[in-house]
Length: 309
Figure (cartoon, rainbow, N blue to C red):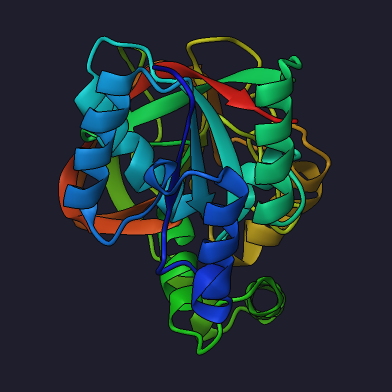
């Protein structure tokens, strides 16, 4: 059958503040059967089976990074060896780091209108191919444990989860690093880990942070994964083992998208990673905090075709 299938997350910030937006998107699609609001993973699984059966050509997802992570994890599981449709990220969430990294801009309505116009007019889409990581059986573009996960958990404690508040938290973090306060000490608490990358064990034995990405950015113009799209089938993995007061030293290099010249920073292009922790820890996938575990496996997942305009 082909066509476009749209999945909306009604719990995302965009739709909570603008509930009428879902109706507008349905109107733009012009077919209520092709525009679906999902309320839990079971809804997404049912739609994945339906879209697979109908051989939908384009999967549009409206929400933020967490919505993309849950939707794509479910679709990859249901589709199995069958390639996924082209993916269109329509934005609309609290965190839009993935769309920003791909330079997908505008309101969901505008992005969707452009998508449908081009599809029915038979115009060519501008696309890019991006790898996605498989992390303990779930899928995402950005992963982190330690400092990154703690930062996100702190951000989620804020009353309003907005880019402005995320920026304020980052400024507070940087100021805390300057004065070596208890906050930076808590954020940078060390953990022991055995890290095996592409079959070889890393020399460092404890860290304040391990993180990886198939896209460059973590948001707020903080782009540590400058090699993320350097080689198909690989992701950029970074480990940091330093004292809290030295965290700031690496920031200028990271903002410049360069390797930090320090023995406390280790990085590699990876396709297969195993992390064995001395004790269970939570971690994040695309901004979603995951339950604590003491073993994490990260592999390169399927390569996706993303519509960028």
